Every structure is written in C-alpha cells, then in structure tokens.
Length: 369
Image (cartoon, rainbow, N blue to C red; front, side):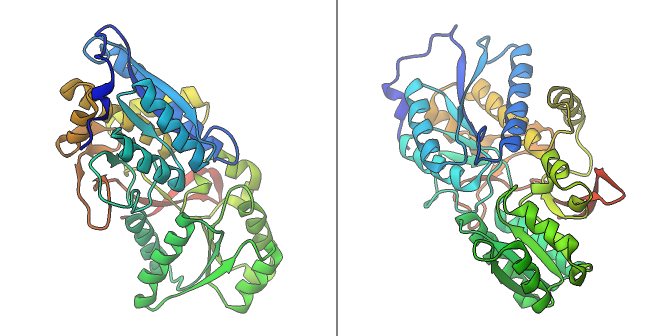
C-alpha cells in the first residue's frame, strides 16, 4: 500500500481531524438523497464531538458537491487529498463513487463509501476502499426474488445509458431467466412515455422496472402507465429507491404509491438507530431515509477507526478487516465478498418496500432478504 500521507506534515494534536465528504447537492445529482446523506454524516460528527472527539480533537467534515459528475468527484478527491484529510466518506451515485474510489485508490486515500452499490467499485481489488451499502448483485437478486414470488415473470425494464443501469438489467436477466422469467429491455431515450405503454401492452408485461433518472423520465413514465387502461394490472417497480424520498410523493401523489423499491434498513432499528432517527427527523423536518442512516454509520465507523488506529492513512486502510462497530442498523464488520473489489459490509439489511396506496406517507415492508 502506498503511504501517501508520508509527505504530509505531522498533525498538530490540537487541530481538527478532517474527513473529506462527497455528496450530490446540485442537479443533475439526486439532491434530496445528498441532503439526507449529509444530515446523517453531520449528526454523527456532532455525537462524536459531544463524546470527546478523536482523542480530544474535534472531528470536522470538508464537504464537496459532486453534482453526480464523475469528473467533479475525481477533482474533489485530488483536492481533499492535498488538504490532508485523514479519509474520504460519502457519495450516493454509483458511477460517481466508482470514479472517486479509483482516484482514492491511486492516491492512497482511505475511502468509506456510504451508499453506492456497483459490485466492481474499483477495477482491481483494493485495500483502500470499504463500503456500507450492499453490492448491487445481492440487493437486486433479493428484488428479483420478490418479483417472482409475486407472480411477476414477464418483466420490462425501461433503461437509460449508464454502467449502473446496465449492471442492474444484467443482474435481473441472469437471475430471472433460469427461473422461468423473461426480461424485456426498453430504451427510455428512444421511447416517449406513451410509446413505453404500447410496448408494455404488446409484450404482455406483468411488471415495469424504472432503471432511469428521477424526476425525468421516471415521473412522466409512471403517470402515463397509471393512466393507461390496458395496464391496470401491471406492477411498477423502482429497485434503485426513487420512491424512498419525499420528492417522489410530492411529484406523483397517489400515482407514486405501490411502487416497490429497495431499502437498506432492518425490521427494527437498534436503540442507537431509534435515537439517531429522532435527531434526523428533527433536522430534516421529514422522515429520514435509509441514506441518512448510511451517513451516520459512515462516521461511526471512521470515528472508531481513528480513535483506535490514529490518522495515518495507511493504518486506517489496514484497519478495515478489524472493524466491529455497532451502527444504527446492526453490527458493522467488513470482509472480502466474491465478485466485490472492496472491503464490504456483508450483513447490510435489505428490504423491498413500497408506499401504502391507502396512506402514501406510510411504508409497507413487502419482502426481506
């Protein structure tokens, strides 16, 4: 491992310990997810500092907006490394996190990825990067099990060009086909929402999965499908989690209910999780998403590592396999997972959830995995 911070001056014991943070805070990034992630990170920093900080020094976040742009993320990683941050945290968008992880690996900057799920977050296995969210293959296979269990075997996926969406479509196709199902891919760039409806009717699809951006084109596609009398029995799904955040309900109202998505929460939060949830609810003035809890757990892990192993970057990265931290959603430990290039929390809880059609502000747990 490259000891990148050997060139940096020794840290003054009285100076804050700084963590670089990547979050999408402007369009075309998913801004609401970015705000939830940042709220979780900041809530955890406040708790760490109230508990004495890192050996008496305060923990401090240095935040950079990625705007869902991989090049912005790479530039931010370069800047943060030069500023002497001990580690990197955050990011929501998988393609952006992949760019950040590659740069962090090259620079020897430990990166704890909060919320991105691409299995191959780096091209080659690395010791510099660890991740809290489950790999896409695990989560989307749980989602496929839910679909098949619900009798939805003719599945259409509306897709846009993206490594993330292409990976999701491949996972679904390879998992569902041997189990008697069919996956039909529809190009959301080439088809207007009404044309998507025509394709669904022609293929006799029983489910439509939205592997597209939010709010465009996801919202107009949902609205068109809901209004098409030929498609009253079709299930609309959004495995990437678009319906989790309040903006979905605001834009779609009742049309946004009954759309199953993946959420990374346990059946019951730990006592820590319940306390953190109340703090996040007060800060966000809305129900915290799983992304906010991912943010809190990121700092909980990094604070434990910094207290135990200090601020040397190589020592932080070497500590991933020894992490054992009680987070808001369970005990966090990292291991090597087949097909995954980074240190992975293998026990991340996974749920398939939707908004209750009778009460769209309430979530129903439909399946766990």
